[in-house]
Every structure is written in C-alpha cells, then in structure tokens.
Length: 466
Ligand SMILES: [Ca+2]
Ligand SMILES: [Ca+2]
Ligand SMILES: [Ca+2]
Image (cartoon, rainbow, N blue to C red):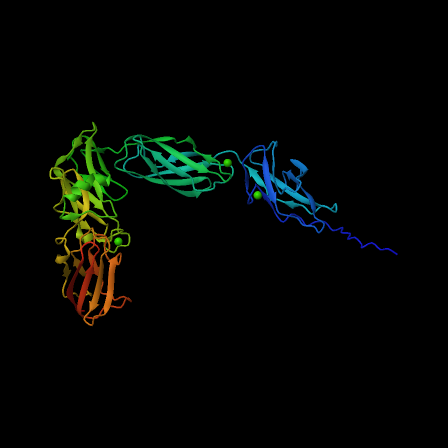
C-alpha cells in the first residue's frame, strides 16, 4: 500500500492589511489634486502566501463608488489617476488581500482625505485711526479657508519707501486674527500696502488679499503744537510747541556700525558697547525735505538700553548702566563727546538730554582710568560687601579672555572671575564677595591676580570688612 505524504488544506482567510494610510507616506488628511488620489497600506499574511492586493475608493468609509475593486498585484502603494474629484469632498480608500489559497482578507479602510486645491485668501481691517501716525498700529486679519490653516498666517505692511514691517499676529476667534505692529519714526509717509501669507492644511499657500489692501501713513507733526516721536525700541524725541515753524518730520534711525568706526577710534575717553547697537541718527526735516540741524530751544531726546532682568546692567553687554552716558558725534572733531546734563532713568532703562543740535547720539561707557595693566585699580578698599561690590578696573577692553584669581591670606583660591561671571564685555570687573560655592568670603586681606592673553599679568591687594 502506498500512501501520499499528505497535503495541508487551509481554508482560513489571510489577515487584513496591517494599516492603510491616505497619501504615499504617513496618513494625510488632505488630497491636493482634483484627478488623482494615493494610498499605501501594510502587509497582510497567510501561510500559503498572498497572491495580490486590491483597493477601492469611495465617498464614504468602505464605499466603492469612486473606484471599484482594482488589482494592484503585490504593490501596497498606489496612485489612482483619471478621477473627477470634488473640492471639499472627502474620499476613503479600502484595501484587501487575496491569498494563494483563493481567500479574501477582511477590508482595511482609511480615515479619509479631503480634497483641497484652493489657497486661502485674506482681508484686512485697520483698527487704528487713519492716516496711521507714529506709534502702535492694530488691524484685524480675516482668513477665508474652507479647511484649516497649518500655521499662524503672516501679515506685514510695506511702506511707500519700501520698508517691510512684520505685524505680530494672534488668533482671536473663528477665522479672525489680531495683528499688531508699530509705525516707527523712520517709516515713510504715504500709501503702505499689506502683504499676507497663509498656508492651509493641504499645503496651499495663499497671498491674495480681497480687501483692505492699502492704508495711509502720516507721521508729520505740527510745529505750533510740538510733539513726540517714538520708536518701538524706546528711543524718542520731543519737540516743544513753537520750536519749529510749520509741519515737520522726526526720524530716529540706526546706521551701519562701520559708519562709526572712525569716530570710535578717535574717542579713547569712552567705549561703544560690543553687543548692543545704541547709536541713533536723530534728524528733523520740514515738509519740503529740508533738514533742520539746530534749535533755539532745547528739544529732549531719549535713548534706551535693554535691562529686562533689572539688574542695573545692560543685557548682553553686561555693562553697568550707571557707568554709561549719552554721547553725541561732534562732526567737526569726528569724535564722541559726552552730552552735558544727561539724566538717567533706571526705572525705565532710559536716559534723556536736552539738545539744541541734531546729530548722532549714542549710549557709551565712559573710561575711568588709562588702559594698561600697570594701572589696575581696586575700589572701594576696604570693601564692605553689605553695601557694594568690589570693582577692578584697568583691563583694556580689547582683551579677549581675562581671568582674575582671588586668594585669601592663607593662599587659598577663593574665586575665579571670567567673562560672563564677574567680568563684563568691556572688561570691567565686579566681585560680589561670594566664594566659589556661593558662600560669602570671610573678612580679611585678599590678593588678586589678573591674567590676560594680550597684556600679561597684574596683581593687587584689598581688604574685606563686613
Ligand atoms: Ca487620512
Ligand atoms: Ca484650502
Ligand atoms: Ca540686565
């Protein structure tokens, strides 16, 4: 008797495709074409192997009204072309496997993709009084988009002089966003135009404005009434009533730092800040564009510096604000001169001065001593840290890596000071009396050593009493 070695009979269906995504990669919520749709799906499994996959497309989950079951062979990633799709409609893919044993798997159905080939459009409603004058400026941005936006839309205005000014945009409600900006002193008077950019979930970028396309800027002041012109960075100028006859414009603007290099080099009595650009050109022009350089009555200029952490030091440069001053550019001598009568306002991080001559003005640090290591100075000495910090001056400002080692009378290293830790960007030193671990240093005699890369070494002594 002869027996066969038997055969396995498997009537079970294959497993369904592991997943199904709209689009050719991770699942997408949007289709971006009116005549083709894509999908991809995961493998199905059967002990006897998979013969082929099939897919279909419908306008409801599991429906086949757009494309009936279609053989994709062993491909699990398909693009169906030649369709006639409707903007705003959602389409669903289905996929199933067919085993070598002649059985269909269960069907995997996608969660749909909405066809969106229409870019958003927008309109702008200006809330500020027009023409827009110097100061904060507000508007509403209304975006028209049937789907959803992928990100916050961007809005800017472009002045008649070509200055592009971004507005800060925040969602308000529904399709409405608030937009806030600032009309600066140096913005051109005339017709400004809005520019918008909004991207929808399907990736369509819209730049079309349907209304609110332009608005007018007018920053002129009335000489009889006088007035103040401000920039958003806190720099401003006030002209009292009657100082200028007729209407006039004030402009407070930055300039290329290189334009000040020559004057900086000729001004050893003061130092420009390294991180912050605090130089501004103050100018006044009449309505015929003729500059006015001098006034019979002082006008008030305000210069501002950043100190967000209110530690009395200019942020970034870490320079003590009380060691700075307003300087003006003496165009004849070509150097920076201190402005007499500078008034500090630490509560608002500003300084003011009354001036009758318009020029460039800047906040600069004045130099306390000549700048060589032999002239190292320490003060106050003795130092009571309950009242003040200990200052060391005399390290030239172009030294790039100064270090100060503070030893007690027992020869123990108490503290090391470096840039950003006790030494500011112009190499002024302020020790807070704290030892390395944060404990306060004991009263007694101390010795400090200064080490520089460019200027060698120096040292001195001081007494701590507290
Ligand atoms: Ca989807
Ligand atoms: Ca759209
Ligand atoms: Ca600060």
